[in-house]
Length: 616
Image (cartoon, rainbow, N blue to C red; front, side, top):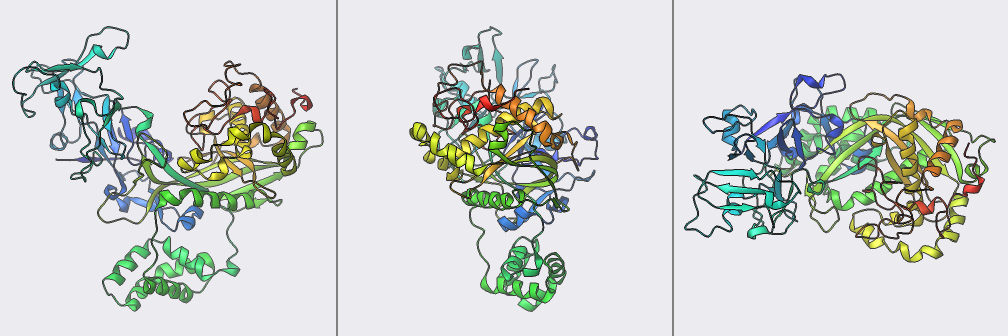
């Protein structure tokens, strides 16, 4: 029997110590999204899919640009003190006692009987708190399960018949010897069967172990049969989230509103799924439109149209049967690139912006800037306030590329019709490079490294936009990482809390800029330390220091002479000693980086001419 408990997601004003099991709202998408393993104290859980969440304790993220682009409502936890909207499932189920080493599978009925308290050892003279086993099994189809420890312990047993699973008494034993050898760890059964961990971890199909299908919280999942691979419970490749994000831009001009825009507003509303269900049940369209009057009033106020026009658009949707939402994961790259294009058109403008969700102040480039910075940087903007909305589309296990199936966030029999998300408020710096300087550099730098840019297939395989497989993107991405690492020293934020958005597209008139920002789902504002560094006087010193930092790497000459530092050709001269950043910072898994595109440490033509810098 399966059992699940709830988890608390506090708002900014709620003291987190009020509950033992809680996560921050900003962690709902990553790293603790649907399908992720969560360690809370000495317990371990997995986040269930959204069909098991309490929808009435979730709130809609209002006026979201991302919601309009996806045509799908986005919801996040309400943050109320009494609300526990998210469902988690204990995983792994197998535990061991750190005192007597007895192993035990904690069933759903055990959780219900103990009111979801920490499992206790069942040995008569022990009764200690138990610890979850540190190893789990996963298959390439994205399924996750406990390791079949009974089968593993008896897989080399040469005695008589194998003891019953129901009556077997097993222990998780260690010899205490050093050296990290798998022979020092074993599972032993009271019947005498025993096997150490040699050939178990990171081996496909050890002892013939196969996947039973589904996720830990599913009661009767579809069968699978693929060979499983055993990993440590904390392995980073057990969960790769697929997410999409957008900044909330200035409101659209409602004077020229179109029927298509109003249809998109209906598609993003909570009412549309009910309207389609009623229409499928042959309920009169007039009755449906009457029930939608309050929603029509809200849309009319938002878009500046008559309520009757909004209702007519809804009639057209339900009479035509609507359109399918399609595969969010498959179209995520196209939607994300379209979002970046629209963000670029706003951020790269000349006028200041001040709206409810966005506050941008343009800054003139000072005449006393270093010659090289004035040649390469066209404009600077201080983003004093911004709102970013992030949504989770699904997740993968073992491998992040498109060859691995994307597990959706909703595994219920009836789709709930919304996506989990978070809204984050923050601040940032927008840097627009001089397009003429970039085009000139691309012409000079491309021929010597043309062969090294044959990464388009690998980029598309990861589900990213093909434009990322370009010299321009690599240079911009490398510059963003260099600046972020330096901002960790100067801005008052840790480098891990600073994010990047890369605006890059090839050809004349293409995008060429970066946005460095910090946005926290638990905060309603910002500290000002990052946006303060966007002042041109301070930024010039920051940029010079960031470039000087990557001239020399402690891994040189190996780092600067390496053309491929990954299995796929996605990185060149880039390592943790010089330019790689944390997972929470990078938009593409610390890939597509090469510091040689920025500074002259090899025969490659760099974008910046270091001899024209001040380095003061």
